[in-house]
Length: 134
Ligand SMILES: CC(C)(COP(=O)(O)OP(=O)(O)OC[C@H]1O[C@@H](n2cnc3c(N)ncnc32)[C@H](O)[C@@H]1OP(=O)(O)O)[C@@H](O)C(=O)NCCC(=O)NCCS
Image (cartoon, rainbow, N blue to C red; front, top):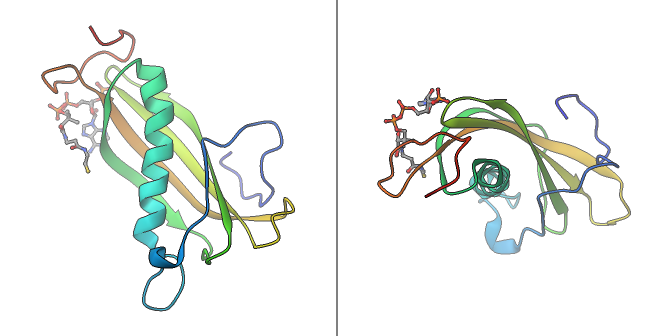
């Protein structure tokens, strides 16, 4: 998923599909970057918590590139995959695509990000990602 293609991946399901609303816009009328960052974090965390078998927290946004704008009426699809597994951390790459209004499958890649999540226990301390929550 780390290439520069614009087509929605045919063989993978998105973690999230979401329609941004007018209240998600910035002062210029495009979708606010913070809205997209939030969706990316949610998508990445879902993949991380499944792999970790329990609660995770975001420790770092390692990379975040806004490639093209998102507009009201676009359908945004977020794909996420594990790129690195450490002792207590999992790094996830998230790619966001926008279908421009027509929703006919034609899309553009609008953002690419890498985030690191840490599995935590009941005391909020890092725990091995290879052991489920006790
Ligand atoms: C995440 C947290 C539990 C880590 O606690 P810590 O005592 O610093 O843990 P460690 O130093 O042992 O690091 C834990 C793992 O995170 C990784 N890590 C820590 N800082 C990192 C960074 N800036 N970038 C990437 N990875 C990082 C470490 O490499 C380690 O990974 P590994 O075990 O796979 O080798 C703690 O920093 C925390 O609670 N942060 C706030 C999380 C939060 O609230 N997130 C939401 C923000 S809105």
